[in-house]
Structure formats: structure tokens, C-alpha cells
Image (tube, rainbow, N blue to C red; front, side, top):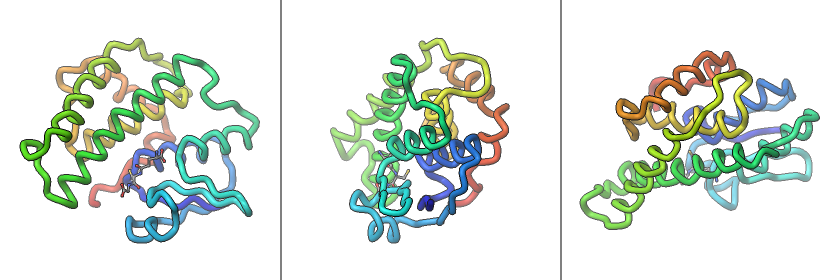
Length: 188
Ligand SMILES: N[C@@H](CCC(=O)N[C@@H](CS)C(=O)NCC(=O)O)C(=O)O
């Protein structure tokens, strides 16, 4: 089994955490944007290849890893909603990040970027209003949220100073040894 991905991607980080939790044997192949554009039809990471099986999305990869290790994946509806809402906000954030980084498009130049940015702010507020469990192991919804928040802070895409619950949640997630083992490298 092989997973292609970068050390900075929050989607890949979630899969790396699941690999540590499940102890499944898997080769991690560091992959940049040019390589992933050739490897995957979606031109994104993560990508999992296991024999004849190719999975192009972190959600299907996580389900595969969890089920392969005898566990289940997102069976609780509230946790599933947390996972999905986080993905929507994270996708908007990643979209803004790449438009600025690759195309140098600024917030003021694009109405759609402004809409994406409003989505990130209202999404973060809604996430901040949720009751998040304070116990380990984190659920998959919580791991996704923690990976998003840590990425957003690291890339300076989000500001948690007014979002006390999310800030406390991220501090708590940092007490998870597997979350700590998968911290993105400083450069990149
Ligand atoms: N829905 C996908 C999203 C993956 C994703 O957006 N990956 C980013 C890295 S953080 C990527 O490869 N982006 C490349 C691009 O947008 O060109 C998943 O859950 O795996």
C-alpha cells in the first residue's frame, strides 16, 4: 500500500494520523503539485494505491484504512457533519491560498474570493459554537477539524484569537501524540 502526499497538506495529515493510529503498513511517497498532476486524475493529494485499488480522496482513503483495521468511519451523524463542514471551510481556505500563491489574485480583485472568505468566517464561527469533546482519541470529525485549524494557523489563513472554543480545541488536539508526530515542517 502506498500513499502519495505532501507533509504540509491537512488532508494528507489526517491520513498520516490514521496510519499511525491503525499501525497499517504503508509507504509514504512525498509528492509535489507537478507529480500529483501526473499521478492523479483529480491532480490532488492524497492518493492511495493498493494493488488494483486507487483512491483519490482523503475521505475514501480514511474509510479504507479504518475498515481495513477493523474500525468504522464516521458512523455518528454529528461527527459526519463536523467532518463535512470542516471540509467545506477548508476547501474554501485552500482555494483562496492557491489563488493568491499561484495567480497572485488578491481578495479585493475577486467577488468570488470575497464570498469564499465570508464562507470561511461564518464557517469558523459555526464551528466555534459546537460542543467539541475533550477526550482522546479524537474522532475523525475532530481530527479533520484539528488538521484544518493547525494548517490555517501555520499558513496564516485564519485567526483564532476571537474563537476561544476552537483555540482551546486546537490546544487540546496538540496533546494527541499522533497529531504532534505529523506536524508540518516549518518551510514549504
Ligand atoms: N477532497 C480532497 C481535497 C484534497 C486537496 O485539496 N489537496 C490539496 C493539497 S492541501 C491539493 O492537492 N491541491 C492541489 C491543487 O489544488 O492543485 C481530499 O479530501 O483528498
